[in-house]
Image (cartoon, rainbow, N blue to C red; front, side, top):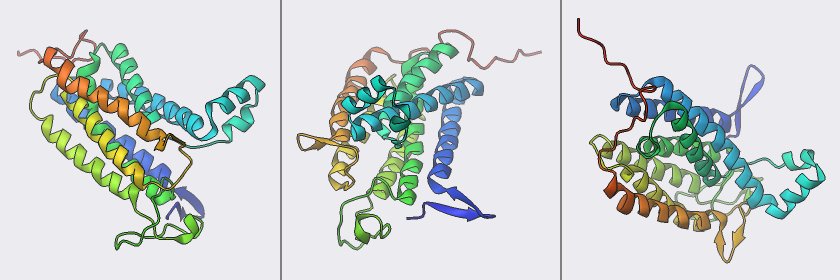
Length: 271
């Protein structure tokens, strides 16, 4: 739709801009949530760097598996054909989500924090960042929806689906992410059992994504038995959310977030 704009003769990609905005938004939300819990802002930076780095790696790896095929990827690796392998570029959110969660685990280990309470703090940040990311998809013209003639549908470009009007699935998902962010942010203002916020996020987003996949039109993400790759991933993630919300949360009420005092904001001594 608007893949780039020009500044002083240089092309600036809007997808990259929205990724940067998503990263900044996630940091601000995460740092505010951590400050409420008495955690240093340096810990928020470290955890986000770990999460964002592994999220990019996970998003790229799942893209390769879904679009190129695991068999083809392994064949290229065995043949040492790295140039052909790396020519395939793209990101899949679910791969990024799984990689990001692994990054949060790593960051918590480095900071001396417990994983589940931090994952609760990350839930609204993930929702907000993903919303900005989907706006980037809309500008770039990827992850587009099915052809339709409803009043809110519009074409992305002549090169996409022949210039047909398309269901704005990227915009709808961005709105869903925004609603989920505000709901989680308000929910987290009070003390909650550990795992509740993360469980709500996983369940709500998995349902939203499963439904919206029926309105997707790009075939690059792959299908199996009438369901897309993302729909298959949505099922275990929804179940993980159920386990967090209804199972683990009951046994971890008001869990201490600190394993060590490394990430704790020092208490100023009164003179």
